[in-house]
Amino acid sequence: MWTIRDKVEGGLTLDKDTRLHGMIVGKTVVASGVLLELHGMVVGDVVLQPGSRVRLYGMVNGDVTNQGGSLEVFGIINGNLVREGGDTIVHSKAIVRGKDIQRQSEDP
Image 1 (cartoon, one colour):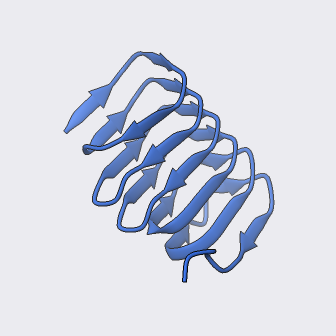
Image 2 (image 1 turned 90 degrees about the vertical axis):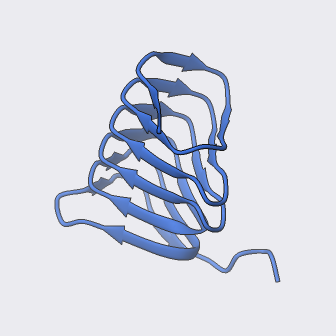
């Protein structure tokens, strides 16, 4: 598993299992089949592609959109949680400061 401990500027598409203990500034896309353990911070949106997995222990300053992955929220989302597909679990001590939006994915 790849570990990010530094600050990464700009958007990023994760194509291998990753632990984030640092910070990503920009939109973060988690590709299909990839696991992200987010202990640090993302300043920007996080998008879960179908078949991806995210365990969010840290903080996202932006929206989190689940397009068909598996999302567990233990930490903080300072934006909207958008459920387009997949499985999303928000644990009791987690915080979602924006709206919890459920909508159909645009894909057939």
